[in-house]
Image 1 (cartoon, one colour):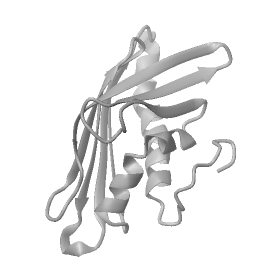
Image 2 (tube, rainbow, N blue to C red):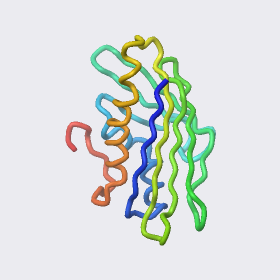
Image 3 (cartoon, rainbow, N blue to C red):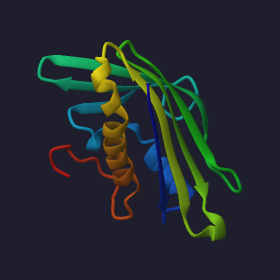
Length: 158
């Protein structure tokens, strides 16, 4: 099992950070060979399903995730989303959170994830967390970039 915790401070408002964090297809913009989509619901409430599909040549696997808790940020209230990974290959959970920083100077953002990859040889388990920190860190940096204009880009064209 790999445990990944990322934190960022953004000059953006909690509402803007939240919109970007829960714009699920944009998560795939910085993950090689992966497309992310909402397959059930709007992607904005508990019970909705998100799918990350990774394909490298003929090898394809799905990472379906169910939103089990979601509360948008509001005045004096942080935003929080918990996803449960329900796939055969990837199991675990992810939690995303936004909270206004003290002094109204921006937003603290957290991304915590615990995942297990089925049938991964024991020798490779040790690389999951470091690789996950790099990959998910790129996604988080992309989503929170103050210069990001909100348009999806093809992953090969950053």
